[in-house]
Length: 64
Image 1 (cartoon, rainbow, N blue to C red):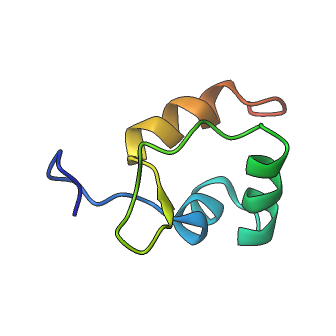
Image 2: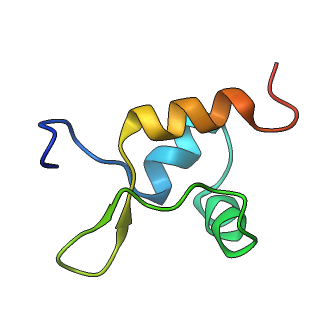
């Protein structure tokens, strides 16, 4: 759980939301196409709040 009281997303949740594979989301991040993570969890994994990804997904190229 995040400090905002909502669950944060990892690569699989983001992938499911935008209809791609988790490896595609990782590639987006490597190429600077994904927003910076909202935080990094205790295991060192990046996490994003759903609202961060929803806002990004609405603006990403090819989204209609």
